[in-house]
Amino acid sequence: MTSEYRFTQPNTRVRLGKKKLVRVMRAKDIVEVIAWASVVAVIGMFLVDGGAKGINDITSASGAISRLTALIGTDLLLIHMLLVARVPWIDRLYGLDIATAKHKKLGKPILYLIVAHFIASLVNYAKLDGKNLWDEFVNMLLHVNDMLTATISLALMIVVVVTSLQIARKKLSYEAWWIIHLTSYLSVFLAIPHQISTGTDIAGKPLALFYWISLYIFVAGNIVWFRFLEPIFLSMTSGLKVVKTVRESSDSTSIYVGGRNLKKFGHKSGQFFILRVLTNGEWWRAHPFSLSAAPNSNFIRFTVGNRGDDTALLQKIKPGTRIILEGPYGIFTEDRRTREKVTLICAGIGAPPIRALAESMAARPGDLNIIYRVRDTDDAALAGELRELAQRRGFKLTLLEGSRGSDSSWMPAHPESMPDHDRIKLIAPSVDESDVYICGPAGWTHAVEKSLKRAGTPVSQIHAEEFAW
Image (cartoon, rainbow, N blue to C red; front, side, top):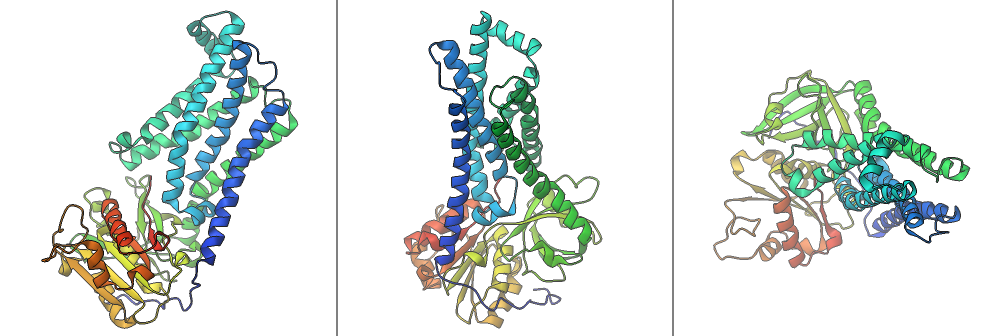
């Protein structure tokens, strides 16, 4: 442990019980009802406008399909974008990983709707003009207002969806994926002109015009402010910069970020920020890092492991380097706690948020049980601070060192080949009555969750969160 570190005072009170989770679920229901109501609203406006009347041949049917798929697809596309705009009111309900998962699920249906809109429009125009599909396509590009930009919009959307597929994401760096996905904003922007110039559902219809303008402004306002302007404004006015770095182990370093009035960031233990280093070569790279110390008025601390990519450069970051922080994000906090007993489990990159939670959680001696899976007990990041925290506050700390017992196990080998769910009951006897917070590599975290369920811990008491993209 670093002798310089001074622990902050933990929370003195925490509201327990499941009633607070019920309120969260109700808030989610309200948001989701509003989202689906927006889809119903555009369908309703389409029907009131006579969209389903007079369908008696391929031409009229394709025209109706073109209109309806465009309306539903555009509405869902705006919801789709809002889900990953990193807006606080969505993040507080779902967390970034779940919001991102919902965003991904909407991607393909939206693409199918927009492609259906394109094909139906092409068929409709071809029938009206008496041309084949290719000739009509060329004619639309050359002679129909704003159709070229609309086609470019569709092409960009296809690129964004394809690069979101799992097989593609594995081959892309976060930065490459991020740059490609910035084109989704351009895609929406390019589609707007043709909705007005060639569409019949907005122009000249006051209610529809008011609805769509309001929806576009609401979504754009959230994205522009929370995704771009607020992080820059808060970071610049706070004067965020690296004040010092401390080597924690052979492959990890703590970065202390200082500035003015840090409390206005509103961060809590267990949350993470997206950090940007304002140097010539690094300002455009985004790094998601969890807090490794409880919030205080003096600094925001991140403990960064050397994973062989840009994190290697951060090991040598110089004091005085300016920083921009986006966030905080995540619901991996004490706000989701419902029980008196708590078990904190971590490995590798998951140690920082667990370390911060151990410092700030309201607890009596014996209430917290910390399990830290390490490669080497003498060279584990933040192990010294966890030992001192456990000693000061009367917590139990278990360091698990050694090679894995099997491919499906998250614990080191046991001489009696005891399964993980039995071993965790020995280490943390009240784990089935505890809130359990897990943080570590994704595969390892899933293995821990599986053993906890077998040990009798209810799913509602298991808390895990991933850095999703």
